[in-house]
Image (cartoon, rainbow, N blue to C red):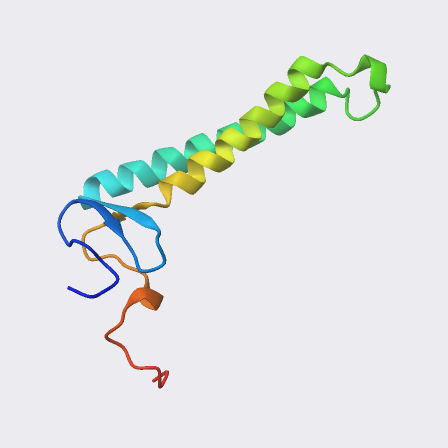
Length: 109
């Protein structure tokens, strides 16, 4: 076990940089990756569409902008980004970040 990991088994793992990673089986990792990416894409695109509708394609005067739709659009964009960001914490057994490996030399070759 290297210094950058606290455990090799399924469950949370903290790297030397303090980043928490969750080790899951490969099948679950693939499912999480696919669905979180789809949710993130749908969230961000829906958010931009709502912003477009709220501002009437940026043609509306400031007093005519639908604040509720605009805030919902921004919330969907932020939610999509957060979904994608948190899904990157999952890893399958054997996966790791090459920069966290202490076993490799610094000779770059």
